[in-house]
Image (cartoon, rainbow, N blue to C red; front, side, top):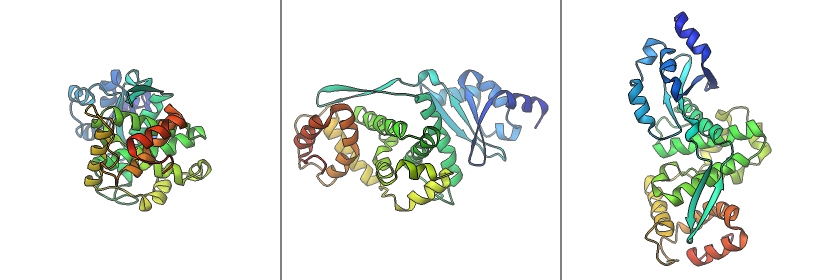
Length: 278
């Protein structure tokens, strides 16, 4: 590494990930970040303007790299992180305040690099886009426990993903709640905290996780649209009944958080034809 590149790298913030370093790059420093990379590594990435275009209006993006020391570049625009997430349920708008969202966004992006490093060992060599997204949130869950000693932020991410998909079915590719619920129910806080690495945590939970094929995710997508979409007209308790208990299990914690027990019970009975807790 040249002396100029070393000077630039030392001036930038990095984070340890997957046995390497992730280069944390605020959007205004993108040119400086790119200049800090070795020429061969820099060539793996598109140009500065194309990277900015790929980021679009998002608050973060990760660009994995093949490099002996740098796992990837995490581009950050924290001023774009939302302070709340909202959704309309049964004609009423519910709002979830978001705490420390910039940290959660960063942990999710770092999770992508950790997942990338575990492919072919702890994880399958080939992962779908959906698998990569929910596993990145599984890293966020583990990391938030290690950083805070609590599950509060993990539950916040769980609720945020639920509200996002209720609001816009286009967010289903990031609907990690469908699988995070299994981790949140299976593992106590103290147990998660005992895993010194995400690789160890992932190696424990992944073999038993009940993942879905694309057809199963499509069924949940259809049920979500029928239940919360703009075309909703009246409850149809028999519609895709075989998916309703699982969907109720995933969204009930969020409904309880926002609506309370009584309203959640009423909603499940009216819209899903299910008794509370079923």
